[in-house]
Amino acid sequence: MLSESIRRKNLVYAVCEASPEIKEGNVFTGVVIGNYGLFPKVPEDTKVVCQGLVKEDAMEFRSEDGRYYLVVEDGWGEKDGVFYGISARYVADLGSPTDTSSIAEEYKKRGYKYGSFAGMLKFKQEQRELSEDR
Image 1 (tube, rainbow, N blue to C red):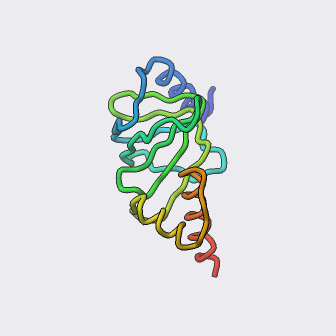
Image 2 (image 1 turned 60 degrees about the horizontal axis):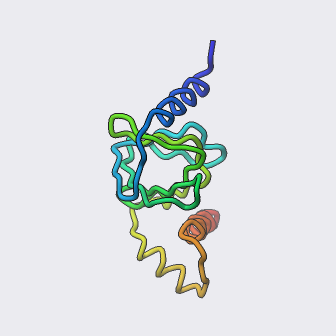
């Protein structure tokens, strides 16, 4: 008997292998990730938008409302309007809907320079986590 996590991964691999190419701007009605590792999970009914390639084997997505940002690596695909990804390389849950300009503005106020959007999001998430610990 296979565990539920192995079945899930097998489904994700099958969808990704048979899927057409995903392009920047594609919108999906849900998200299924085979392996989140230690990252927080994005609810499966979350609508996500493809932001484009981060590198050859990694692609960035955000939820339609801007709450979740994730970088998926090793493969991705689509079935029945739902996005499937092999593994999450990075996931940010900003706690509430937001937009990229408000994140960038807050980052700039702190005097930091950022080399990547994922780095900026990581900063925002760490800031939120630190304020929750107080």
